[in-house]
Image: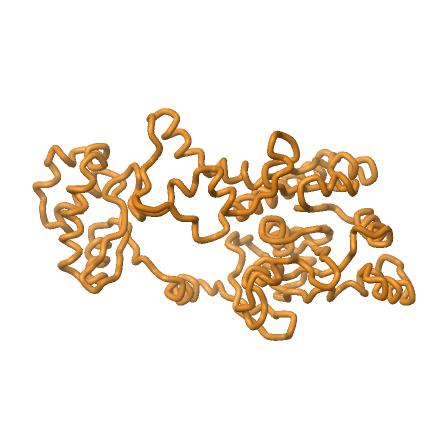
Length: 399
């Protein structure tokens, strides 16, 4: 552990999470980063199915390593009476309960917000679903790419010839972030008003919020933004261009000062400033193809380092289009000391990035990624179960 949990903002908060995959684990991992005790309830034997998405991180799943550090793993068969009894005892001591069970499963087990409020009035329940707990699609399963498709995001991503998924689990990440912020808000409300509010987040509605700008553009403009790769749908020039050494460089023009500086200092064509085809931002978008041809020709005359130097000199924001290996070696990450070691279940260590929100005077928790059921015996003993009872539950595959 990188610092005493009693120094962290959520020290003393206990979170019980019946979670799997990405969205709910991302929310609870961020709570663990801030010092909350997160007890992750997994299936006996196999655990969270995200453990088997891949084996690339020294035998562990890249998804699971990312999402589950600093948690305790408890295996429970929630279909058994004894497994449910263990969960009830846990919830009686918990502050927050998070679940992303299959549609309808939480209600069938009495783990929906209304049922929990009757038994545990101070508990904050958080439900993460695909399309919400009510409405015409409440019973449908949802995974990240399905939601990218349903919200129209895929229709905006890719080239003019072919749509593409976003390269990370953006719907899951959005839902996890809203669940995290919703839980923090509910904890604050409980602390200041004495009322425990339930939190509900769906992948669809989380990503729908992120689709608001293209939704406004489509509703009031009559057509949706075009799918044009790294180019920006409503600003030009804004996109990636290939330099003489083959590396792509992306830059953006945000205002008329930058447009004039680009023409005069980089394109070396000051006459373009007054060219009626490019006089305003809307004009530049309307004549995007002509403008791109001019910019692309200029990039072919300089390598990427020289092009970026000249754009910097003109005070125009730019960046090389990095691959993942270049991102991992980024000077900002090393220069700001953003990497920490995290232990894996087998004892190996891997590098992990610090959480992006720095809180003055605190050191985020960066504890180990748990093995399946690693903390089961200790948690059961803490709840008052005797060794013989624990052994019996193991023999009957309850834990």
